[in-house]
Length: 386
Length: 177
Image (cartoon, rainbow over the protein chains, first blue to last red):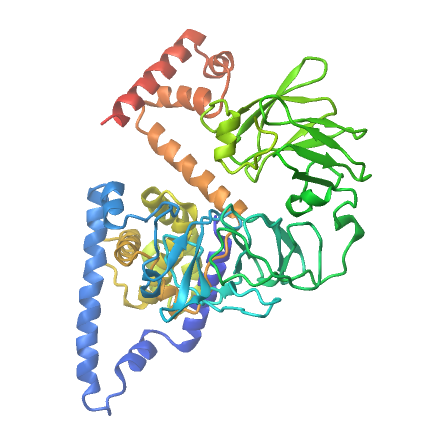
């Protein structure tokens, strides 16, 4: 049984096409021309010789293959540093245009090893960005770069790229403000794919069958059909003029609850959280987080002596602590004195909690206990941190 | 029908090439997988290898001592080396044949990884004496309890433990530089 039946089918189909076009004689006739074409037979002889030489090479190589282990991985790796491994920060594709501009690794795309970059469309116009995707870093194949400036509400650095071979996988990328909530890519079939931007505000997505559209959600959670001006540190100045908007009718369930304090409205994000429950979280004057359930009941977040975490008080059964990015593990002490340890999600940290729970310790990726000053240095808003 | 005959028949009988592919796909894919450690890459290189072979089939001549499988592996090696030199997977033959790029799902890739991981285990175990290989496979690969293996092989549990221990020791010594 074949492990790659689709390849077998494609090869047999190709063989069938070639058989229909004629056998070796027809092939030679096409390559070398007919006897009435003067110099062409001589060309055919030279071509035949070249083919014969070429045929000898693989055969010799095959014998070598059987007699030795072949080239070592180390030697291959020395030949091509990026071969056989996922792209790393600092890597850069090798096609000519990639020498310009800045490349950033965005991690995996649709479960594949992939990286995305952005290059200026021209040296004279550095703000005219387009995106280049390299979905197989080892292949280093160029992709078409098609800026979609203005197409979606004036968001300049937005491009839908299609592989040069017209692969069915299409990538869409965008620069979004780092604190934006999420980006929705819409597949050709209309299925939404939600993606969280990376910390630097870049996001990319590919989908079998292609992508049809991008939709964005404002960071304050309000879905609007109108693009709005937005500036955020970390996004190249002059590049982001606005957001694209949802194209569909707003859903009441997607609106930020009305009782969120005004000062916190800009920093609230909706999260997935507990199954079946739409939740919101955000921070007020500290990074302490409140959460709410589907009933839009107000909750309160009280900062702790250590300056992090908080006690969530609410009638709701399930709440969520949101934590600074550096936090990788959180120890929670329950009201009854028992404790639980949670690994924090990569995207920013949500852990389930109940009313009365208290954050006991926050640990970084190395297991170190984070103190208030550590969190402050990491960009946590000051206030309750003491 | 041997491999030589399949290659010779290919220009006029497309199914012959399909048979050749089915016979050697796993070996060629394994060849590339061993050198790249990447299922997706190995699959693309396999596609290019067979596409090149299909194009070259009309020029294939039977030579004593050089079976068609050697010819095929020679093509595989050339495809791999050309890909390395160019820092991208060679795909000229595939394009020339008008074949679409392979679209592999994550499930396909996982299946390929499993197949070739199993092959790697089989190659390792083949270096052991049969009784040690059987014991190591039962205990380490199949996770069979010692008692069950002992009953199945009709030896004492102590013997099975000794065989596993010796087998692992031998693999360890062969794997160390």
